Length: 345
Image 1 (cartoon, rainbow, N blue to C red):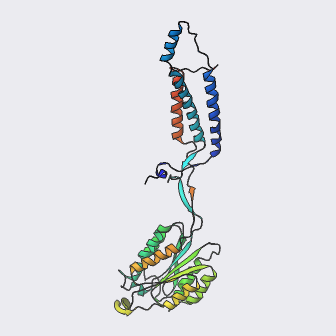
Image 2: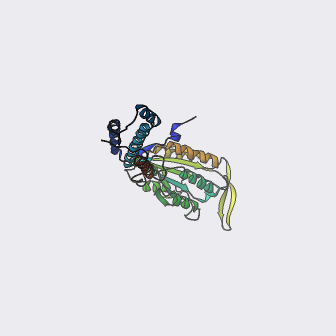
Image 3: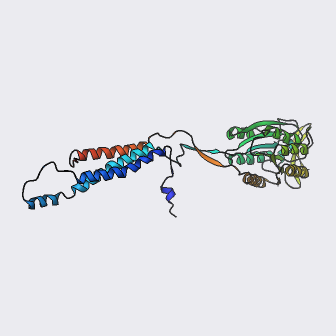
């Protein structure tokens, strides 16, 4: 279906007050037409009336050409006025960027304990969690996103930022050899809450992912959830792990070996955290279900409002309008001073 918006660009005027000068053009047209019609010839004709009529017949189109020249002059003036108004296309990507008025601060809290290397996800839970988290980040715009990593202890890998490239690089570096073993859910959540401590933020979210139960750290999960609630932070919790058993790494004196171990996720604690902090609890049993969970959270947190702003100042006098105007003026000047002179009394 034809859409005029696809052909006619949407335009903004940075100095629209200049357009008031366009109101003068009809007045100039009327005055010029009146003077042109009353203008006297340069030379008197002496001869028979039949010769005069024949001469008029041959040159009857000259007055129309002079009217056209007048129209060209006024068109050139109109284009100059439009140039002074400084038009700019709203769709011009080199001048426009989107600014988000109500972006969301999001902190990802990811469990990197040894059990996250269980191979019920492809290739394991941690790598699947990293892949889906990066997809989630790349799909957001205008939100500051950060990363907290936890196992037996927790640390902030990346504070909330709009530099998604750096954040993704930090996610790529995640591994289990950075922290002492264990699963300190309360400490991980508490650290994430501390990084979102600014009470003036309009919207704050934590997405906490784990595959186990709280067995380390000095902060209890429910205590951290209450703190999140007090700071007006929503918390979404995700339990990662298939149903039944999964090949899980076991640390022995001879290194790490994999054994089929039961999947033990403290879902009651994760549900309680989410309920206290105004979020939801989700269970991911494979990579696709994890991806669907992030998509659902992504949709739930689409609350920002965008506004288009100028990146840089556009041309002060759009060159294409001035070029056309100068061409019209030059053509009119040549015609008026050679073939079709116009003289006003």
